[in-house]
Each structure stands twice: as structure tokens, then as C-alpha cells.
Image (tube, rainbow over all chains, first blue to last red):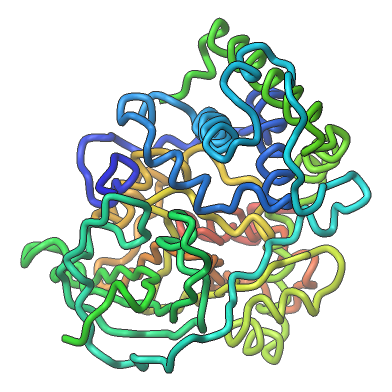
Length: 218
Length: 203
């Protein structure tokens, strides 16, 4: 969706202000939110693209005024309710009123190797690879109303395939409950002048990692 | 944009998170002690020192460096237990002609396995919006000025690939041990918003 989260190239947010001596967490609840996300992900109840999709659907004013872990918390709540893991009444009460649904597995303290290792997104290819390094491609002009990982600032622009990363689970499908729908993934590199116009700095190139359905030959 | 300064919102979040955690625990979905261990790991064990060791080894060992650039995940895994890196780590090399910088414009994807928790600035709207359009301006915010003819490559982490910048080894470090070299490797130089320290900046 064309949401506020897709902010590459927007102006007006000001300077980057690095914090000195930044603590791991700024409040204890932030760590709990991280732990909840890891636990539900391990349980098979909260894939990363469901987390992203829920954040993207936050009202823009909420998105912009919430901290990173606040957005995570809101996204977990929304997924918990939408997936029927708990209801709003239970979250408001702070107690379960009905039994839980069976989940695939449960993360426990003795399984930290699993909790700290990212899962693989490689999937079995469903079709031959279409592009090879050096090919010219155009990022499609597409505006799905649901989750996608093709940022607006490259849509319609021509770039070069630089790398091929194998076949991966396709976020657009995962976030809409259509399964993994595996797709080939490529690094596509664009000249800044192609993206931002002839006045852009000629020494700058920008790449995105784009799934094959995002691309067409150019 | 942070709301951390507002005490009332902070306590509201504490209550809200506690309610969520309690419900999910009572439902049998999560084990609170697993949360404790995850938090402890990110507070104490998983951090940019892991990436720094990877970089220092690449600076010292050309065979490892080649393997790292060919397959980042595989090469980092070969270093052993300290780096439980997942698939899809891509290491990109800075050269005298090319500077790499990593961003995630759509959310805040970051190589947690090798750098630990992402800093607030990396997740902030100013960085995410500007890095792809005005990387030299962003570098200036970090006090970094590159030669005007230096090529800049910005990697937007739009899939599950994760990027780590291999910075250039500072001059004046001949004969340094990997341990000593690792002290020169900052988190920001592995994101591309900084450069390694000079040897005279560390003891």
C-alpha cells in the first residue's frame, strides 16, 4: 500500500540526530515487545511480513508519532486480534477469558539458539529464473492496496540487475494469506539521476532488492 | 519523534505491554522466561563487536575476505558460536573509489545477527527518507565528508537480504592483531554512516 511507511525520498523530516551512549532499550517494556515478537514468530503465528503489514496500516499520524517499539506493540496487538489469538476485550482486561488456539510450537528459554537465529527465506523455485546480472529492467508501476516491498521511489524507473539472490518467500503473498508463492529475488541498481532527475549527483547509485513480479524487461 | 520523554505515555505503554504479555501467557502461546533470555542476549551478547571481529578478520585474512564477499552468511558462520547468523547476509566492500551505505526505507531492516539492536537514528524518518536521495547530506549529519568524486552506493534493504559494509582498513595498522584491528571498527562504519577509527584514537 502507498502508506506513510514508504518514506524513501521524502523531504521535511530534518537532520539525522544520532544519540550518544544509546542504551539497548529506552524502557523495560521495549525489550518485552521484542521478546513477544520473537516468541510469536517462533510459534508460527506472526511472520515478519504480517508485522510489517500491520504497521503500514496504522493511521499515518499514529505511525509518525509512535516510537519503533510502540509500532511493534500495536502491530502485535492487531495481528493477535485479526488472527483470533485473543480478542480486544481480553487485551483491554489484561487477562485471557477463553482458551488459546493451538500453535505450531512454543519458544522456551532453553531454545535460545532458535530464538536468536533468523529463519531462512529461501524457498523451492516454481519457475525458471527470468533475469540475469546485467539485464536492464523497469520496476513496474504498481500500487497494490496491500503489503508490498517495492518502494514508490523506484516504480516506473529503469535499473540494472546486479545480483540474483535465489528464490524467496514472496512478502506480498505471505501478508495476504496466499502462502509463500516463492519468487526470484534480485538486487536492482539505479542511477540517482534516473530516480531523482538530471540534477541529481552523478556519483550516487541506489539499489533495492526486488522480487521478480516487481520487474519487467526494459 | 520519540515519545520516550513523556512519562505518562511510558507508563501507559508499560501497562499495555504487560496486559498483552499476560494474555498471551495465559493463552499458552508464550513463555515469559524466554523473553527474559532474549532481552539478556541483546543487552549483553549480541552487538556490533561481532561484526567488528568479522571485519578485522577480513582485513587480516584475504582468503576469508574473499569467502565473506562471496557468501556472507557462510563465512560468518564459519567463525563459530559467537555469530549465529541467519541466511541472506551480504557483505559489501568499500574501496578507494566506492563507499557503501545501508538503509531500510520501508521499515528498519538491519543485520541484527552481526550488529545487535539497531540504533534509534537508523529507524528514524530522517534517515529512512533521506539516505536514498541525499546520502552525502546524511553523511554530513554524521560528520563524514567523502571526496566529491567518490562513488556512493546506497543499499535499500527491501527484502530479507541484510547488508554489512566492509570498510577500508585504516592506514598505519600494519602488523596489528585482529583483536587490535577490531577496536577500530565502529558500528556506524559497518552501516556506512561512519569510517573506522584511526589507530591513534585507541590505545
